[in-house]
Length: 347
Image (tube, rainbow, N blue to C red; front, side):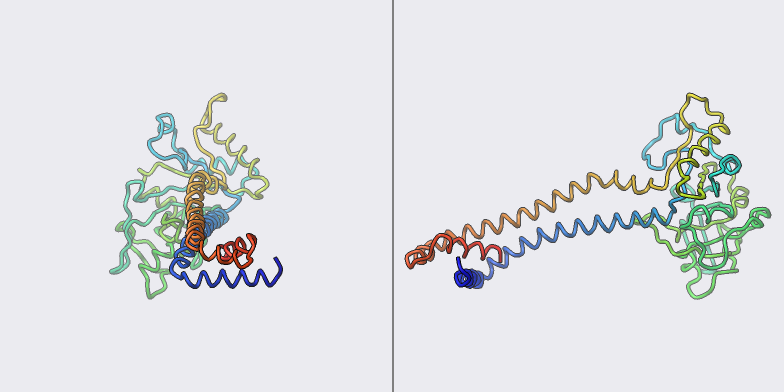
C-alpha cells in the first residue's frame, strides 16, 4: 500500500470510530482500566519499596540488634525461646568491652500498650494516651540515628548517674501537649510524676500506621529501672565503626554473649541477632506473594480490555459486511480492508 492508500484507510477508520461513539468510548474505557491497573500496581509497589529502603537507611547501615526473642516471629513462641534468660543493662557493657569493632552498644527497655502497660502523659489540660516509654542511656541516639534530637538535647551521662526525672519527647507528642509554646524546660507529668522536657526528636510518623519516633518518650535508663523494675525485656542496639566491619562485629558480639551467658559450645545461641537489612528482607518475604497476586490481577484486567477491543472489532466487521462487499466490488483489496480495521483497532 502506498501513502495515499494508508491515508485513505486512516480516514475511513476514524470515520467508523466517530459514527459509533458509545461503542468506541466503552472500548477505550476497558483498555484504560487495564493499563491503569498495571501502572497503579507497579507504582504502589515501587513507592512501598522506596519507603522501606528509606526506613532502613534511617535506622542506619551500621546498627544491628540483639534480642532474646525473634523480632519477625508472630504467634506463641516455643517454650525453649520463652524460657531464655533476659538481657540486662550490663550485657551492653560486656559487648563494649569485648568487641573492638563495636563503636556503641546500648541496652534499652520499653513500656508500651502492646506490652500490656499504658502510659499517661499530661501538661495542663492536654493529654497523650498510649505513648511509648523507653529507658535509654546517652549512646542510644548515636546507635540508632532515627532518634535524632532537633530541639534541646538528648539524655546525658549526668542524667543517668543522678537518676534524673527528665525526658525527650517525640514531635507528635510535643505538638499535642504544647501546641502554642516551646516545650524545652517545661515540666510534664508522666504516669503522675513530674519530668522536665530536655529535647524534641526529629519528626518521624512511622511506617504503614505503625509507631514512629513521634510517639516515643525517652527517659534515662536508671530512672526507668527505678520506676519500673518489673520490665525485664531488654533489647541491645550495636553500632559498628565501619559498615565493612559488620560481619566481624557480629562474630565478636556473638562470642562475647555466648561466653557471658554460659552457652555450651555445641548449643545454639539463646538470643537473636537482627542485622540492618532485616526490615527489607522481611518486606520481601511479606510482599513476594503479594507482587505475584497483584500482577496477575492487573494482567487479567489488561487482558479483559484487550478482549473487549477484539470483541468490538469482531462485531464491527460482522455488521459491516455490506460495506466490505461494496468496497471490494469497486476495487478494494484484502490488504485495504485489513488496514482499515487494524487502524481502527489501534486507534
